[in-house]
Image (tube, rainbow, N blue to C red; front, side, top):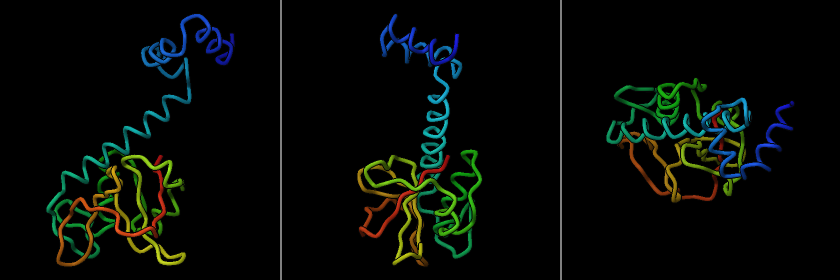
Length: 157
């Protein structure tokens, strides 16, 4: 029996809700795509939690933690601690991420601020239109409302 036939049979016998429960128990053998989506979501939420734990850490240009950060240093540090390596700069992180629309953004996605085609700042989406970020010299890591519509979103997988 193929995986597709097995999933169809499972869905018809036990219903979608029970199939998802079975998939969670049986693992990726039942619904292969489900596991990779769950792993990406877990990674993003871990990175978000790590960034939030750095609240109050001072900004320092070129710093990537563990006590001082610039914007891309905070995202790099957070994702590295969560288990995923990112490039060093905001622009390179944008180029490495999967670009998504605002309507598909989720907590833990990266938020890239741009002027024209140039990315100049990055933070981690916290939900409700807010990001965790390390804004600029003289400030500290904080949760803040997104202040412009000139943003792009990226997902780390």
